[in-house]
Image (cartoon, rainbow, N blue to C red):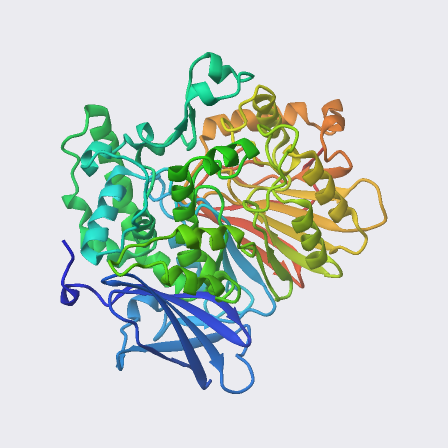
Length: 622
């Protein structure tokens, strides 16, 4: 039952500093009543343009575009700001390290916080709280204060949702009266309790009779699932579920409305009840750190990019996967819902509504007179939209890649993994990198990964099971791999390219140089994953040993890899055993001097700090 607006906090989320540039700053909010904001920034007279989207009776998504009336914002320095709503100053003390929140417009980037993969019900602590503590300590030190927070994928896990999270989402939908969509062609049990941990049974499948006779699944009479996550029992389906889940992933105030302690799975089996209880314990720890995460968002410019889990696992991994989704109205609807929710809560802020804002009118016009979404027409515009990637003109330049919607499909075999970017988009990337002295390149999946793991993926792919081990590395597609390596070998590309990646749930530091050629450039592959997620530690240790043995510098196996023209150096950490693969929930701190990498550390959720050695001494080359 919808709440009375007097029972709800006015501000559910925000302010979040999204894109901050000399001529414009973008802030993001979520409110429970019609937003009416005014804003003051220290020492600058500003004008404010407000764009809001109504998502429910008591739910509004709002973006403020703030421009200086004269000149531009002062760069690389703290700018205190205050906000009025309905003529009254908002109490932002909980979001402040001093007397008010302090944003910064980056021009020369000295340090960057980077991470990906934030799973609320993972047992580890949220490392955004660690980042918040670091920002508090360095707020007034220009050389150490982070210029940006870059979140490079899996900000939510739509395909891996805890039972209590799904129940909380439905409570929030009811309380805020979030507008439902009217065209979900999927039959589910009427009761949510009957659906908990069971949704994978009702998610769309391709019947085995319709599968190719050249596949083993046809002869084993095994239906082909469209949603391949092994944790799809609570997969998000409707748009209102996606919206509520975003609020619960980022808003402490949203959790105060649903009360986690009052959520019970009384009808669950014994095994499900144990999982439900474990999920509640993990979520309780997550909720306790949300105020720290929100304070971080209010004080540092936060840019994001999707990976697969923001929509669903294995999103667009193969042309066959895309074909299965296209042939199912229910599957198309779920994928579109995930992408719409990403656009609303992440995409719009990434470019300050510059290109993404052109979709707003089509979306708002999809709301019927009965306050239901009829999104069929909007879906076409959404899928035609091609500008999810973006740049930030700082020093060094920040280039953020969309590696999900511009896939280079294998036309000969639809079951083969698609390249992460097609030829046209790779050419556009090349143009962005030309004649730059240094570049921060954000690629959700590592460009240079662990060879032993990529070899295991190749074996599974050769057996016809690319979805089993997520064959999503740049070297899995011949054309994309060759073109990318050619870009890095060009003489007019940056002398320093720092690639920031996540996705894999472990962290590492590799440096890369061309074996042949006159271009004396340096490429860094810095991978940090996850913010709140981890790879099984023992298994990772085994894989590290395997990689060390199979792909040592003298190993002939190196000649069979697509990147044999490049020399890859693995940099060890100062962790126990000096391992170069680290599994720990953490956010990375990338420090630069004059556009060059000077230091790379992991600020771990457990309070420890892991640093990678950047010198060549004692590091393995292959």
